[in-house]
Image 1: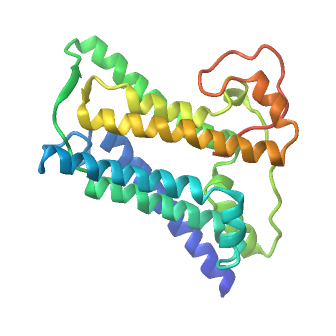
Image 2 (image 1 turned 90 degrees about the horizontal axis):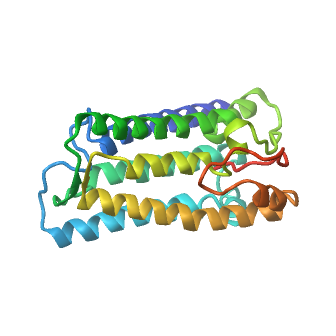
Length: 251
């Protein structure tokens, strides 16, 4: 019964993540969804600013703190180890949903691209960013990254085995292709508003700070990661000059 419950928990957490990330595509791109990053303002500028900064700060802290090994060691004294990743995915999804629900549009246009073809270019890059995000997860192991593999192995009564770190395709061009994809989705838009700048700046800051913690953990766990770090750029892709060590980021 416990194994079945953990499996159901993991599946629910995964589909909540899937729903939230699909909504994020419309939210950030101002397409398809009823409320987006640039919907009509409903509060004063300062209230909107501090609300949005708070929402993004909560997301960044949750996303980073729960990913740290020390927190995982403490957390798995409370919850089953097999459910640890699913719990991380669940809390990340809830933090993202809170951003959607309580986000305050702010108005104010920084730039507005009128050219139809240039708008098409920017939307194409925006879409490419999301393709890179999803592709990055499947290149390592999408189902392990989002906890499904862990709960399935637990359901089958099999021990969890680490997949190790590999550098397939994009990971030979850039150490963090997933973060690179998020940066494309944050900054490439034909209409840049004040709210969008706040979002993009906070996401960029989170990525730059989060990478430092993540890579510090990776270097402690993987002695060869330091060499990989010296051979492959962090966020700006570059064609590989030689074969790097077989390690890559999980996040």
